[in-house]
Image 1: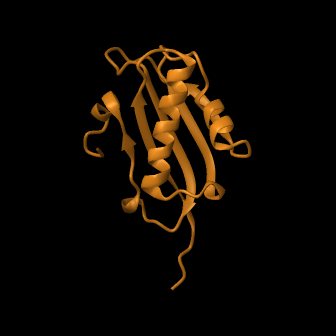
Image 2 (image 1 turned 180 degrees about the vertical axis):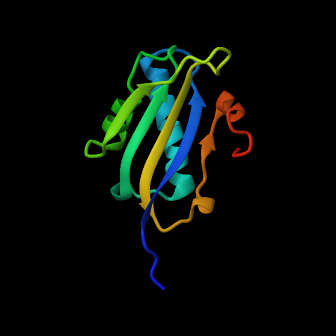
Image 3 (image 1 turned 180 degrees about the horizontal axis):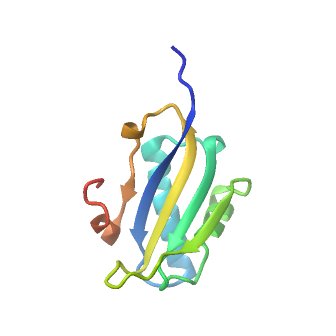
Length: 124
């Protein structure tokens, strides 16, 4: 039986210590590294990437970090703002990577780091 590739998405989130370009870059690259390794994502199979940031993170674009440091210059990426829900987690960076894979939804591993583990304790 042949393994067909189908588009699936994995989610991840982390928190950033402070609103600085360096800390956003570091947090972005750590989160992407863990998602890529956990799900064995081949960059050629990435369809698109969506990043969101809470309103208190505006010093850098996470997509820029991926483009420059991972060479993802031919992957469609976008950065957007999270809605400012009262009592929501602060300095939170989220990502959703859509990629082609033979894995089932149940085999995917979502990654939540630092204080973002509180967002989805069922997936940590």
